[in-house]
Length: 181
View (cartoon, rainbow, N blue to C red):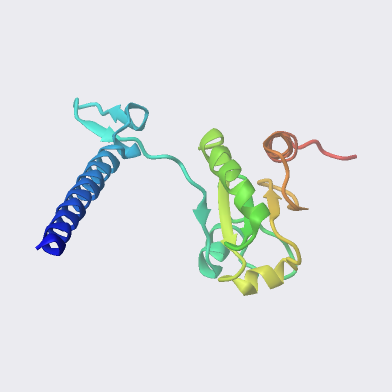
Protein backbone atom coordinates (compact mmCIF):
# COMPACT_ATOMS: atom_id res chain seq x y z
CA UNK A 1 0.00 0.00 0.00
CA UNK A 2 2.84 2.34 0.87
CA UNK A 3 4.47 1.67 -2.53
CA UNK A 4 1.20 2.54 -4.27
CA UNK A 5 1.04 5.89 -2.41
CA UNK A 6 4.62 6.68 -3.36
CA UNK A 7 3.91 5.76 -6.99
CA UNK A 8 0.70 7.83 -6.97
CA UNK A 9 2.55 10.79 -5.44
CA UNK A 10 5.28 10.46 -8.07
CA UNK A 11 2.69 10.35 -10.89
CA UNK A 12 0.98 13.48 -9.54
CA UNK A 13 4.31 15.35 -9.42
CA UNK A 14 5.13 14.16 -12.94
CA UNK A 15 1.75 15.32 -14.25
CA UNK A 16 2.25 18.69 -12.56
CA UNK A 17 5.68 19.06 -14.23
CA UNK A 18 4.23 18.08 -17.63
CA UNK A 19 1.50 20.73 -17.21
CA UNK A 20 4.09 23.39 -16.32
CA UNK A 21 6.25 22.46 -19.32
CA UNK A 22 3.20 22.39 -21.59
CA UNK A 23 1.99 25.81 -20.41
CA UNK A 24 5.50 27.24 -20.81
CA UNK A 25 5.68 25.88 -24.36
CA UNK A 26 2.26 27.33 -25.26
CA UNK A 27 3.26 30.73 -23.83
CA UNK A 28 6.52 30.66 -25.78
CA UNK A 29 4.70 29.85 -29.04
CA UNK A 30 2.17 32.66 -28.48
CA UNK A 31 4.93 35.18 -27.74
CA UNK A 32 6.96 34.04 -30.76
CA UNK A 33 4.02 34.30 -33.13
CA UNK A 34 3.21 37.81 -31.98
CA UNK A 35 6.80 39.00 -32.34
CA UNK A 36 7.12 39.01 -36.15
CA UNK A 37 9.09 41.84 -37.72
CA UNK A 38 6.54 42.27 -40.52
CA UNK A 39 4.13 43.91 -38.09
CA UNK A 40 6.59 46.45 -36.73
CA UNK A 41 5.67 50.07 -37.49
CA UNK A 42 8.93 50.79 -39.37
CA UNK A 43 8.04 48.07 -41.91
CA UNK A 44 4.57 49.43 -42.63
CA UNK A 45 3.64 52.47 -44.69
CA UNK A 46 0.42 54.10 -45.77
CA UNK A 47 -0.53 53.95 -49.43
CA UNK A 48 -2.38 56.67 -51.33
CA UNK A 49 -5.80 55.14 -50.75
CA UNK A 50 -5.32 54.98 -46.98
CA UNK A 51 -4.74 51.24 -46.81
CA UNK A 52 -1.72 50.03 -44.90
CA UNK A 53 0.81 47.79 -46.64
CA UNK A 54 4.29 46.51 -45.91
CA UNK A 55 7.08 48.53 -47.52
CA UNK A 56 9.20 46.76 -50.11
CA UNK A 57 12.94 47.05 -49.79
CA UNK A 58 15.01 47.47 -52.89
CA UNK A 59 17.32 44.46 -53.12
CA UNK A 60 20.11 43.49 -55.48
CA UNK A 61 18.90 41.54 -58.49
CA UNK A 62 20.29 38.04 -59.01
CA UNK A 63 21.53 37.43 -62.55
CA UNK A 64 21.72 34.20 -64.50
CA UNK A 65 23.78 33.53 -67.61
CA UNK A 66 20.90 34.65 -69.84
CA UNK A 67 19.85 37.72 -67.84
CA UNK A 68 23.50 38.81 -67.65
CA UNK A 69 23.68 38.84 -71.45
CA UNK A 70 20.44 40.85 -71.67
CA UNK A 71 21.17 43.40 -68.94
CA UNK A 72 24.94 43.73 -68.78
CA UNK A 73 27.08 42.42 -71.65
CA UNK A 74 26.20 40.12 -74.53
CA UNK A 75 29.62 38.51 -74.88
CA UNK A 76 28.31 36.09 -77.50
CA UNK A 77 27.34 38.95 -79.81
CA UNK A 78 30.38 41.11 -78.91
CA UNK A 79 33.11 38.75 -77.65
CA UNK A 80 36.03 41.13 -78.29
CA UNK A 81 34.50 44.35 -76.97
CA UNK A 82 32.73 45.35 -73.75
CA UNK A 83 29.42 46.91 -74.77
CA UNK A 84 27.31 47.61 -71.73
CA UNK A 85 23.63 46.77 -72.32
CA UNK A 86 22.14 48.58 -69.31
CA UNK A 87 20.51 51.98 -68.99
CA UNK A 88 22.08 52.65 -65.58
CA UNK A 89 25.63 51.94 -64.44
CA UNK A 90 25.93 48.77 -62.41
CA UNK A 91 27.75 46.99 -59.62
CA UNK A 92 27.95 43.19 -59.78
CA UNK A 93 28.76 41.13 -56.69
CA UNK A 94 30.22 37.72 -57.59
CA UNK A 95 29.61 35.56 -54.50
CA UNK A 96 28.97 32.08 -53.12
CA UNK A 97 26.67 31.08 -50.25
CA UNK A 98 29.49 29.31 -48.37
CA UNK A 99 31.82 32.35 -48.48
CA UNK A 100 32.04 34.25 -45.15
CA UNK A 101 33.39 37.53 -46.63
CA UNK A 102 30.56 37.35 -49.19
CA UNK A 103 28.07 37.12 -46.33
CA UNK A 104 29.70 40.17 -44.74
CA UNK A 105 29.24 42.34 -47.83
CA UNK A 106 25.74 41.04 -48.67
CA UNK A 107 23.97 43.55 -46.37
CA UNK A 108 26.25 46.30 -47.73
CA UNK A 109 25.08 45.46 -51.26
CA UNK A 110 21.47 45.65 -50.05
CA UNK A 111 22.14 49.08 -48.52
CA UNK A 112 23.79 50.23 -51.77
CA UNK A 113 20.75 49.01 -53.74
CA UNK A 114 18.55 51.22 -51.51
CA UNK A 115 20.91 54.22 -51.59
CA UNK A 116 21.44 54.21 -55.37
CA UNK A 117 17.95 53.12 -56.43
CA UNK A 118 17.29 54.70 -59.84
CA UNK A 119 20.97 55.69 -60.25
CA UNK A 120 22.95 52.42 -60.17
CA UNK A 121 21.79 48.82 -60.59
CA UNK A 122 23.15 46.38 -58.02
CA UNK A 123 23.38 42.80 -59.26
CA UNK A 124 24.54 39.53 -57.69
CA UNK A 125 25.92 36.45 -59.42
CA UNK A 126 26.21 33.14 -57.55
CA UNK A 127 29.50 31.71 -58.80
CA UNK A 128 28.44 28.18 -57.81
CA UNK A 129 25.36 28.32 -60.04
CA UNK A 130 26.78 30.51 -62.81
CA UNK A 131 30.17 28.87 -63.31
CA UNK A 132 30.43 30.00 -66.92
CA UNK A 133 30.13 33.67 -65.91
CA UNK A 134 32.75 33.13 -63.19
CA UNK A 135 35.02 31.57 -65.82
CA UNK A 136 34.52 34.41 -68.32
CA UNK A 137 35.50 36.98 -65.68
CA UNK A 138 38.30 34.73 -64.36
CA UNK A 139 36.93 34.85 -60.82
CA UNK A 140 39.54 33.15 -58.64
CA UNK A 141 38.71 34.78 -55.32
CA UNK A 142 35.38 35.88 -53.91
CA UNK A 143 33.84 38.21 -53.21
CA UNK A 144 34.73 39.98 -56.41
CA UNK A 145 32.82 43.12 -57.33
CA UNK A 146 32.60 44.50 -60.86
CA UNK A 147 31.92 48.22 -61.31
CA UNK A 148 30.59 49.18 -64.74
CA UNK A 149 30.01 52.78 -65.81
CA UNK A 150 27.61 53.50 -68.67
CA UNK A 151 30.54 54.14 -70.98
CA UNK A 152 34.04 52.75 -70.81
CA UNK A 153 35.49 49.59 -69.39
CA UNK A 154 34.44 48.05 -66.08
CA UNK A 155 36.81 47.59 -63.15
CA UNK A 156 37.00 44.61 -60.80
CA UNK A 157 37.70 44.73 -57.06
CA UNK A 158 38.56 41.46 -55.33
CA UNK A 159 37.92 40.97 -51.64
CA UNK A 160 35.54 42.51 -49.14
CA UNK A 161 35.73 46.26 -48.60
CA UNK A 162 34.06 48.52 -46.06
CA UNK A 163 30.83 50.19 -47.16
CA UNK A 164 32.43 53.66 -47.45
CA UNK A 165 34.96 52.30 -49.97
CA UNK A 166 32.18 50.90 -52.17
CA UNK A 167 30.43 54.28 -51.97
CA UNK A 168 33.65 56.08 -52.92
CA UNK A 169 34.19 53.81 -55.95
CA UNK A 170 30.58 54.25 -57.08
CA UNK A 171 30.66 58.02 -56.64
CA UNK A 172 34.09 58.59 -58.22
CA UNK A 173 34.32 55.88 -60.87
CA UNK A 174 30.74 55.15 -61.90
CA UNK A 175 28.55 58.19 -61.29
CA UNK A 176 31.22 60.87 -61.84
CA UNK A 177 34.02 59.23 -63.80
CA UNK A 178 37.08 61.38 -64.39
CA UNK A 179 38.51 61.09 -67.86
CA UNK A 180 42.24 60.34 -67.90
CA UNK A 181 44.13 62.36 -70.52
